[in-house]
Image 1 (spheres, helix red, strand yellow):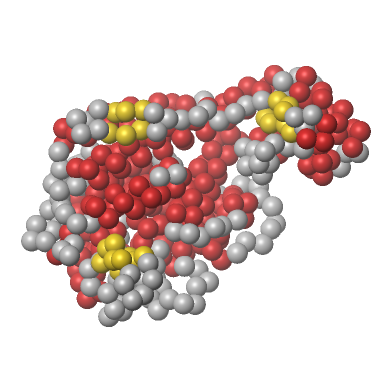
Image 2 (cartoon, rainbow, N blue to C red):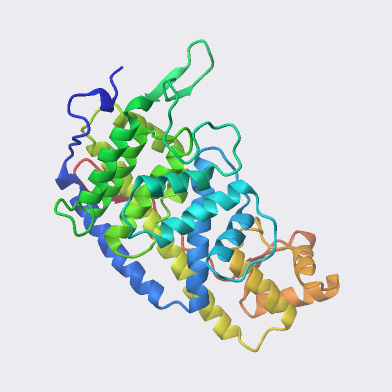
Length: 385
């Protein structure tokens, strides 16, 4: 098996530019619309958008790798680092580390990429790990770095990265390429093309002992933010998670050759879909503000507390809906008072009820807009389904 980095034209990637033209235009237009939407948010909602986007990306980029994190802990850590009000919960090293990396990515989106930045991210990401030899530096082991599946003695090798001895020189070339293709550079690349190549290029080198997927997706986010000129989060990981098997399949296929049109088309669809997911979150926050303005002065303290809690969590903590028991726990209300408050909230349009009696569940009267799956076909057309 010959991998892309073993071929004589590495890393001179080639692709059909015309196939990506419509996707590139759609992404830049969507970015401009998104920036305009964010400007209409209140400060507190803008803060919530930032925390929500970063925490979602942190949790989902880890889940892609099979690591399940506590979302509330990640959010709490992000809020503290941004100087926002946060609870005093104890945060584990994994949650703390990924939260720090996401905040650093957000704040330093315009800062040139460097070995030092990547080492910093790696140190954050693997905080608390005792099973790694190389932390905050490129891998140095002599064993091949392989992505495998299946049991011994005949596991399937999905990919083998460059040898450790080549990593420093390959990364020096990668960082140089990243900087010379960014905004203001002579070899400026379009947004989706640069981000897609950056992710694949980095993953092909696989420079760290662990954490390459998460850092590679962060680099793609950094590239997209630079192209838009805003410290935005495009929800790449959250969208990739829903297509995880396709993601690994697309990467594996792209790792076998340096003609990468199919990979870039797949990545472009994911990036546009991720941008739409972020736009849906902004719309949710705008609708939330309208709902609260309409209900101003009409709710008692208990109702307001419960509603704000649900809106803040986006109903994530209440899978299947809020129950009367949940309401009583949040507000300290008696069962009879909880029932009376909830009936009133439904009548005012703040909540929507489903089910009856003990099975009654309540959802916020504001919902995230569903988004469509986006793919780029062989002719460059954008297909939504």
